Structure formats: C-alpha cells, structure tokens
Amino acid sequence: MTTVSVSLQQQADYRFEIRFGDGIATLVADEPAPLGQGAGPSPAQLLCASVGNCLSDSLLFALRKFKQVPEPLRCEVQAEVGRNAENRLRILGMHATITLGVAAGTLEHLDRALGQFEEFCTVTQSVRQSFPVRVTVVDADGLTLRDQT
Image 1 (cartoon, one colour):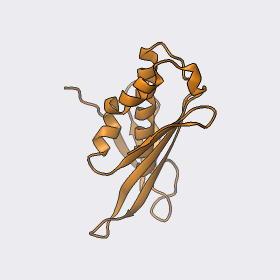
Image 2 (cartoon, one colour):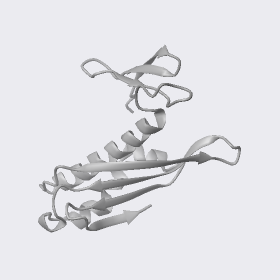
Image 3 (tube, rainbow, N blue to C red):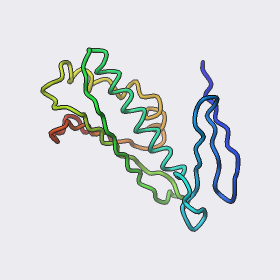
Image 4 (tube, rainbow, N blue to C red):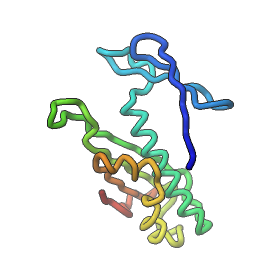
C-alpha cells in the first residue's frame, strides 16, 4: 500500500496554501465569492482537475503501451453541483471530454486502449463510487470515439 500526503495551511478565510512535497510548487486554493475571494481553484475544481488528469494519464499510458503517439491530449471536465436529499451541496456528477491530438486513423490498437484505459484510472474509479462520471473521447478531427458513463 502507498500513502499520498499533502499539507494545507490556512492563509486567510477560505484561502489555503497546499504543499505537495519537496520539489513541487505550492498551490493556493480558495472558495469563490461570497465565501472566499476566488484567489485559486476551488475544491470542486481541484477534484475536476484530478479526474481529468488521471483519465488523460491512463489513456496516454494505454496508447503508449502500443507505441502510439496521441499527443497533445486535452481534457475538459465539468462537474454538476447541486443539492442532495438533505439539501446539502454536493457534486452530483462529472463529464470529462478527452481530445486526442491526432486523427483516430493514425493510431493502431485504439479500440483496445479505449476499452481498458478507464479501469486503470485510480481517481475516476474511486469517485465513481459516489457519483457518475461520464467520459467522452474524441479525436483531433472531432470524431467521437467513446462516450459512456
């Protein structure tokens, strides 16, 4: 088992400095107004970034396993924030769209990579235990290659 640690230090109100360890730049996170000042990404935005980064890494790894070059990848993630049954704000779902940097026809074994990459995404598979995450993959020409929850 591996442990991942970060350290948060309150700077003012809802603004925190986040430290990831030696050699890694610190990050400032903040709630948007009216709670915070929006001086950095919100916790929900950081979760979106984590899901998008993990999915992109997993797809890149799956394609590189077959010696394919899909770069540069781009990923957009939207989180639906709303009220749960107890009227508390929660992330109710996410939609990640990964765009390959090349046309699908230039990549070998693409179907195989698309069929398995999500299973290796640690963050996405973990948050899926709480809410649905829809993943869409499109190529550089805008062709939808995969779209599923």
